[in-house]
Image 1: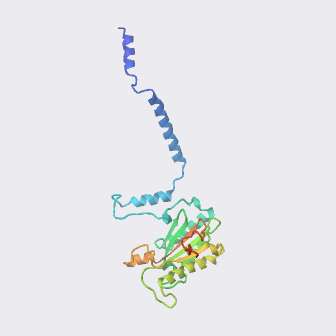
Image 2 (image 1 turned 90 degrees about the vertical axis):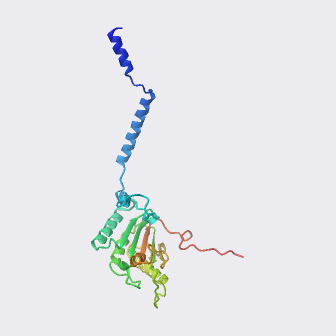
Image 3 (image 1 turned 180 degrees about the horizontal axis):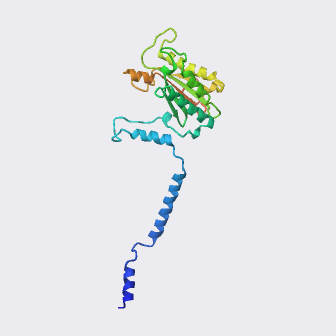
Amino acid sequence: MPEEALNLEEEDDEEPSAPAWMTTFSDMATLLLTFFVMIVAMSEVEVKKFQEALSFFQGRTGLLQSEMVIPSIKNQVVTQQQLSQEQAQKYEELLKYLEENNLAGKVQVNLTDRGLHLIITDSVMFRSGEAELIEPSRTILRILAGMIDSRIQSVVVEGHTDNVPISTTRYPSNWELSAARAAAVVRFLLEQTRALSPERYLAVGYGEFHPRAPNDTPEGRARNRRVEILFNWEPWQNETNPYLKRQTLPTR
């Protein structure tokens, strides 16, 4: 057999044995991968959300541990794009004020899918057993009031206490104290120039019945004594509001 024929047979034997459709499939997979890489590259990374997710794993050796973290609706942090430019500036101003005055550990600020949510320990807001606002809570509330614009539809203020009974002439129980504190915050916000109309505010006193931590330690009781404020993106409707929903008695 001629040498050229032998070389041709060897070249034929070295051709790929994969079916022809594999070439088309590989091209399609490559194009899809390129497409998704472009989407990811053009998307905006929510840095704060990523950092919170990353912090959950820091210091942990595994996922199945005794500490379980189940985020509530209030704590689902979203991007600051939900804020207007002026609101974003006030938000940064608030965070800066808290840091400069060593209040970051006493005031928790979250941007949620429902609105801007704050949890403020009572020592920042009031003296023990009282419902009159003190500094620096007034400064915090003034900054918050500056964030009220057309995006904010309603404001809900919740007062909470620990389980230590109070019995004074003015506040016979924790119910009255927590409600008075919530009302004091609402009254202060109504006095600001950017206040919403009064019917768009809601003040609720929960007493000691919605704790964040067990009341068997001083630290736990300190966490439970707080005021929570939610600046809502959506209005509160009385007929659907769980706080104001009333039972309808059957007619005879």
